[in-house]
Image 1 (cartoon, one colour):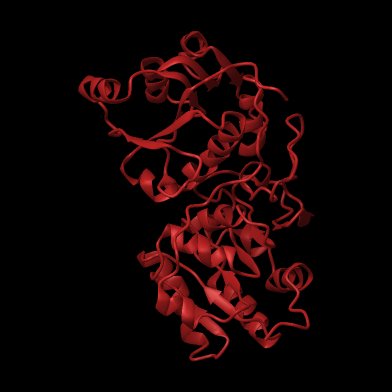
Image 2: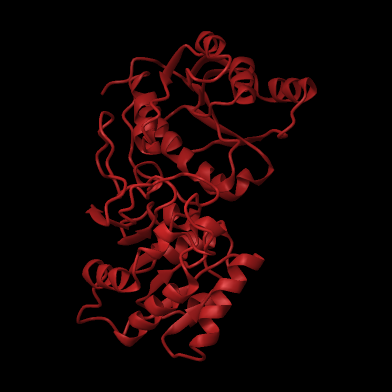
Length: 366
């Protein structure tokens, strides 16, 4: 597709949480390939630097307060001026205001079911309409970009920073990253199941690196697994020892990734490594890791919801087949169990078999 417009100065809005901000890197990579000489800036909140600081497609980060005032708007306008194009994939009113103030032309998304949709249609020069079919974020990005004649580059650009020397020297040459913690309880696969998977991998000869952030939830889950496998020579932990960009390098250098619907899973999708992803509560069709550089079809969802296992490109998904999947809720409507029944439906042996098939050890593995 040949792009029809000549934008020299572009602002991409990414005032999301950290996990969702990773998905915005599809826009910055696609725009950079379409406009190699343009100035491409990203509007972020305070923690946005964690995602974008090392991104090679970006010229500047422009920080704005989550509760920005007119004074903040004028400060940015004085420092940066207005942009030829503002790209805003978010649906809220505040980012629509950002688009109007900072952009001469504006590309966005509109949800007809939300109040004020008519006004946003007037703010944006080009916009897509929200489909409400659990559309994948990659397909949605492609629909937006094609309005200005830009082909989507279907991959994420993860932040990168070198591993600390002590950790780099302690890791084996070949390893698989297992990320057991989920962001909240309803998405958490039972710790006992994670233990069975890690134990099974160790029994087969895999070298396993457990990852996790320096948060109480992550520490509790990873330490419980470690306590049941004390001092195993093929089990390593980087719990709480890496920042976001260093975790990307850990994933990049690995044989593959095993984990839930999570930020690390999306970071792993920035590399051509096998990914085994466990998902059920959230819609797989919308949030599963996108296969590395897999072609985008804007008219159909890549993944199906409620299918026990499916493999597309380098990504294998495992989920429940219950009719209520995905519920996309914060609490299970059919059970008061600590772990969601749909996640308990995913059996450890199924995960182990997927690992064996998609991340084989091979003759050169040591």
